[in-house]
Amino acid sequence: MAEAAPLQANMRLVLDGAALVANWRVLDRLSGAASAGAAVKADGYGLGAAEVVKRLSGAGCRDFFVAHWGEAQALAGKIDPARLAVLHGIAPGEEAAARAGPAVPVLNSAEQIARWRDADGGRCHVMIDTGMSRLGLDWRDDVAGLCAGLDIDLCMSHLASADENSAQNAQQLERFEQVRHGVKAQRYSFANSAGIALGNAYHFDATRPGLALYGGVPCDALAEHIRPVMRLETRILQVRHVRAGDSIGYGATFAAEHDIRTATLALGYADGFKRALSSIGAFRCGDARLPILGRVSMDLTCIDLAAAPDLGEGDWIAANLLLPEVQAATGISQYEWLTQIGRRFDRIWVD
Ligand SMILES: *Cc1c(COP(=O)(O)O)cnc(C)c1O
Image 1: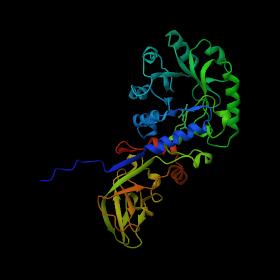
Image 2: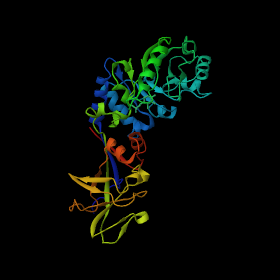
Image 3: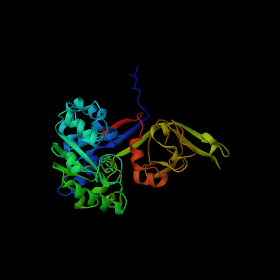
Image 4: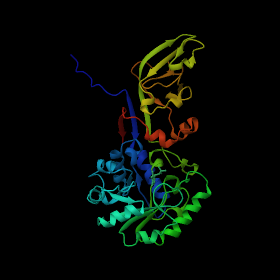
């Protein structure tokens, strides 16, 4: 008797490690004299932080950024703790654990700084808010006074509109320049992915790309440089002959005008394959485009097989999901497409 084949997920994310590394290298080069780090929060924007860190470390990337301490803990042993930053800073009571922990906190408020001093926290980073009103010391406050005597590695700020040709970019830069001179730090850091494309004035010592590493294209200037990293593949669960007049899926939003051959695929909106793709998204087979018919369901999606008569049950098929295109088609940002990719995929790295 033949040995039973292992049961596998009917969906896989095929992740191109060479493209990830190439994207980091080009962002590092475009960062000029600054060195590019990597934002790996939200599990490496959904792709898997541990695998991302392994590949980028191997390519020479040194600085990594996560949002939560739990994310830092998950990377313990994979990154020099001095080069892993926790953007959310420290909540009351976390000082001792943070000091001994797997990463360096980014202090965001006068209160956090006071608690860090009381705990003899040591090396830290500091975030200055220059116009986003989110996290960080207000640039109009006595930032120099608040930071005096702290052992600061990165003094940073974050751009609100780097992906737009906005006057806010220059305004934030001016504020950061004004404030940072009063803050003694090892290094200064300002630009995210799109900020890198704004030019040398925005680079300082370290840049913090996220989106573009993973194949997102936040602005036209980066389009020619960035390669896609992720490909969604799924299996055909069933092939059907849908008759003229039959409808497909919830709400019967598609009705066949003539007899068609369709495939039902093993993924849906629970996998981050959003309902916004209903009736507008597609899969592909070679050069053939296979449009989605009707609504995307939680675990299933139906497509038209007319352009790919040879496909049958069990075959694998790839989604047409280029991040900038799918953002334009659905209005859902590339950040959301990446970070909401589901957990049911097998994540398969090639290279
Ligand atoms: C998420 C984040 C980044 C990365 O931004 P991208 O737009 O994904 O390049 C950089 N810096 C901070 C503070 C962030 O929160």
